[in-house]
Image (cartoon, rainbow, N blue to C red; front, top):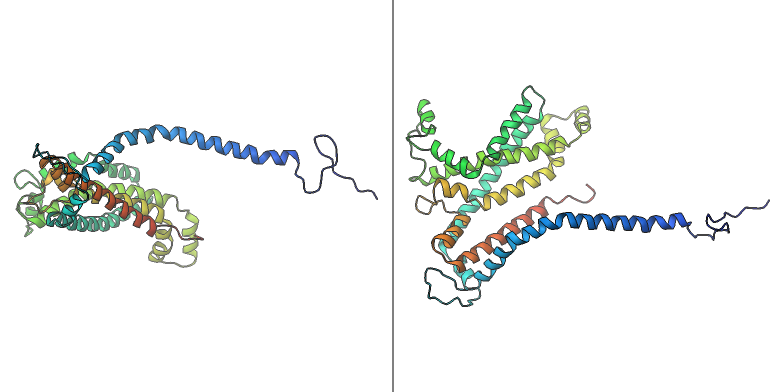
Length: 327
């Protein structure tokens, strides 16, 4: 019995063994060309935003780097703007003022992250449940986050005022021992409490909305399977919800950490770094060196060190929250 040899779709001649047909050969080049076109289109679409960011942030960054290696104190107009190497960085690192501000900033960041994530996660879990008025609750949660930071700081500063605010009034109504206090301007712990409350009120909704978005992409099938296996609420939360919420949690923690490390508006509006210098954080200290002391060399060094600190923290978080292989 004769075996028919498959014919080529082009000229009818027998196709060689192992030689792909013309249609198959054309699939790969066409796919690569389409992929290149899509990539090129993506670059063109993001190019305006990248160019704008480079214009807005590129020049100040380069200017600060240049300042950080030069003696540039505008208080003394006749002083030469000569190159001094890393002397500005040495002055900053060995300064007790910088070290104290760094310590206060790190403590504030750690406390804020722990509190905001715990409260934000609890709020997200509550908003994830189905109940009457859930839409109204979700919309109202966005109000503090949508409010400008300066406005919210002024609002809380007025509320903590012992004469015009209602914080002391409410505490006095409950006969609390810490009522009728001056929260801002005299006591360091109370000043930090006011800053912490105002900052958390502003940023907890941001954490809650991100975590709520992460909760909504978790399929219900995994919860049904855990329920069929007899898992308790805590076991389901610890072994199902938290692992699958890790991507959203990493985004919330990274952004909230950077916000706390670079906090400025709340401190500037509510306490102005006082009493004394007890509430000065790194960003406020950098502002004081630039605007008040007009020492662009020291201010530039502080700016670069803040950028490096933010990058190091972000890198650590990315490594910690990096998905494991096979997950």
